[in-house]
Image (cartoon, rainbow, N blue to C red; front, side):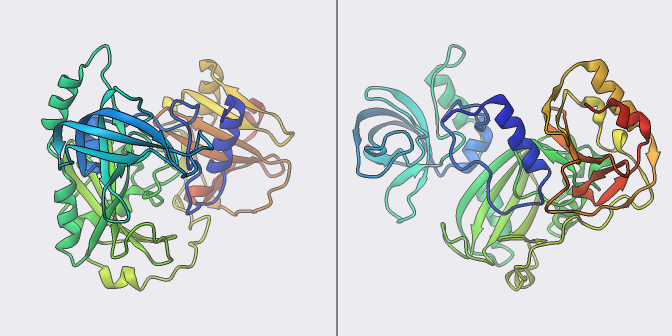
Length: 400
């Protein structure tokens, strides 16, 4: 599977300029492919995995299960435990590395694997993408790697306790995401989309801060810092993605749990951890898009979304062209054209937009702001925050 740069740009634009969806855009990418998730950090892997062991691969053999790479089947790996860092594994055990291979290990190789119980309740399996195994590198031996893992205190049990103390039944861990928290001045807005498309974050971050306060947590002091969201299955066991399935989300920064809230599949919530009855009774109707104007008193888009940090602007024009702007002078000119406080109107959304619409993504590396431009009325729309502005002819003249 190969994804070109242009195709990846188109994917990002399509994702950014569409209303929120309940499914992930990328289900299974081969390790190292363009656009595949980057390797996770050790602390989040320690939180996510139930079992972490240093192993040697005794043998690798095909199975009858269809694999992602090999039509003959995903490999079954027999592993010998050398050292445990979290949980426990048998002295020798087998795992199925598929349908999306994440260990990609060969006979005789030693590596650290991150595992969880099988859905059937017996045996173990890799935790999945983006990282299920770590290897020695030029800068870190396996001994050093294990020492770092063992020295990292896991927080998943503490997070689980927050939900259980409020009446929830925690059945399994679902996934994790790493991202940079927005600056505090941006907590009231949602459109500075987080790099990595964190499914648990669809509202302005201030909403999650308020909900977290109900269980004595507050993410505000950690604004702008690297953070982790660890997500749990509640009440129902995986893979039961039935409507109404609740999920618990714990926000971690500086190795502290600083936030927690509930969402309901497919688009319910967010709710306070204390609102169990309300969450379980939540309707499953899709939320409206765009939301009500979140900047009714006007907004300076450049300052509100910190566009000065933009590294590249990806675009798709109404005439069918697409590409990217990386020249700092051109980027600065576009940002300057939006650096004024402008009155706003309520945004509208056309699921079949006219061909004249242009799309722009201002990419800072940590996140991106998606804009739509209509040359007919001169409006720039920030759909995710429900407003549109008219920056005038200066902005229009700078567009590709």
